[in-house]
Amino acid sequence: MRLGSLSAELDAITREFDYGIVPGSATVFVKDEVNGIGRLDLTLLEGVMIVLEVTDQGYKVTSCSPLCNVDPALSTAHTVQAHLEAPFESMENLLMTISPMFRDRFQQELYNKLQSVQQQQQQTSQPNMIHMDQPLSLEQSTSLQPVFSNQPIHNHTQINTNNTTTTTSPNTNTNNNNNSSINANDLNTFDELNDWIN
Image (cartoon, rainbow, N blue to C red; front, side):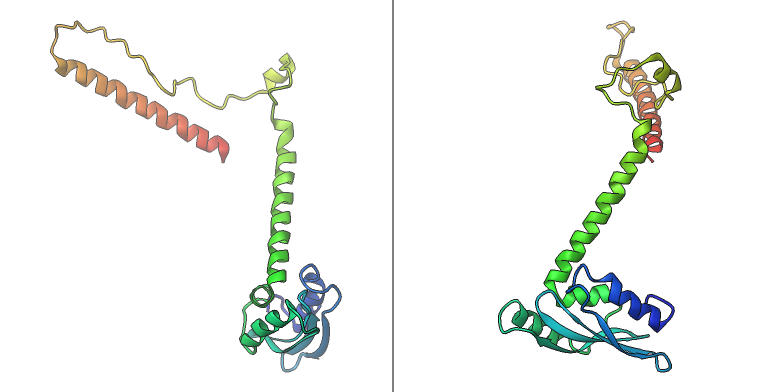
C-alpha cells in the first residue's frame, strides 16, 4: 500500500483513478482494518467489471466479468483472467497491465502533467529572458550579467612569426603549446556554459 492505512488507500483508489476507469465506478464493499484486507469493484473503460483485493502485500484482481459480448470487453476480460490472483506492487501497474485504455489515459495524464510543469518553468524564467524581437534599452543592459568569460572559444587563425627557414620542430612545439592553451580555454568556456545551464 502507498498510504499508511487501509482506509486511506481505499479512499484514494476511489478518487484518483477516475481518469482511466469508468468515473465513479470504484466502490469499496469490504474494509477490514483488523485483518488488513479491503475489497472494491470498479469498471474498466473497456466494459469489464473487476473485483480488487488490497492488502499489505499489494493489489490483485480476484474476479472479472465483461459487461457486453463484444470487443474490447471480451479481449480485455481474457487479459484480466490471465492475471487473476497475481499480486501487483501498485494500483497503476495492475491497471496498466490489464487495461489498454487505462494505459493510454495514464500516459496522456503523465504527458499533460509534464507539459504543465514545463510551462510553469518557462513562465517563471520568462522575466529573466530577453527576446530577440524586443529592443534592448540601457536600463535592461545594466542589469544583464555576463555569462561567458572574455576568452575566445576557438582561435582559427594562428599567426606564425617564426622564420620559414627554421626547422619544423620549434614550430610544432609552439603550435602544440598554443593548441593546449586553446583546449584549456575551450574547456573553461564549456564548464562555464554547463554551470550556466544548470
